[in-house]
Length: 333
Image (cartoon, rainbow, N blue to C red):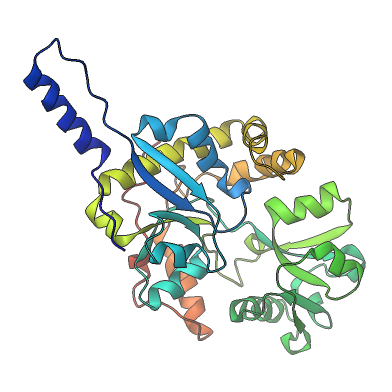
C-alpha cells in the first residue's frame, strides 16, 4: 500500500495563505500533525531510546508529526514496512542488504551507533579468552549463515581451526540458563544489553570477544539503523527530514545525559528494568557519535566492506551498496 502525505512544511504554507486571505483579525490555523509509524526491530530497549525521548519531549510534535512507535509482529520490521504498515523502522545492515537484494524498497537513513557493539559472550569457566579458543566449544545461535561466517572467520584469523567449532540452534532463549546447563559455550549478544544484564546485574563471571576489537579480521557494520520506505523518501522528503531531525535530538539528549534519559523512558514502559536501562544507556552513549562527530552519519566504506564480506561468503548482497543508504537527511550538529 503506497501512502502519500502532505508534509508539515506544505501544511504550514497553506495555513499561512489562508490566514493572509482572511485578514489580520482571523485566528491562526494550526495544521493537523502528520501521522507516521515507526516499527521497532525488537521489544523496546536502549537502542530505541532516542525515539522515545523525541516523542516524550515533544520534538516530534514540534516538527508537525504524530509518531506511533510499535513493536514488530512475527514477520519483522522490514516485512511490515514493505507491506506499507509503517513509514520508518529499526533494522540492521545484515537484514537490509539481503532484503534489498530481494527487491524490498527500504533505505537506511541513519546509523544509531558509529560501530557495531556486538560481542561473543561466554562463561568465564569455559576458558574462551580469544577467538581461536572457540575451537572445541559449542556456539549457540539462530542458525544463520552469517553467524557461521563470522565465527569461522574469527577463529581462522586467530590461528584456530574453525572445523572444530560445534554449532547449535537455540533461538531466542535466556542465554544464562543455557550456559548453566552447558547447552552451549558462547553466544552472540549486544554488549549494551545482554552483557550488562548477565555480567553486572546477574553477577555472572563472563568473558567477551567484542567484534569491534577484531576489525582486522571481520568488517564493521551498522546495527541498528533507522530505515525508511523508498516511496516515502521520494514523495515526502520533508517528512523524512523532519522525522530524522527530531529523532537526532532524542539521541543527542541520550548522549548528553544517558542515565536520566534512560530513567525517564523506562518508567513509561511496562516490564522494563530501570537499572538495566540506566546502565545500558551509559554504556551506549559514547558510541552515538558518527564518523565525523555527527550522529547518524554513515561511512560508505563500512557498507562496502560488509557487502563484500557477505559476497565472499556467498550470502545475499546488492550490486551497489551505496544504494542501500543515504546521508541526505542526517542533520548537521
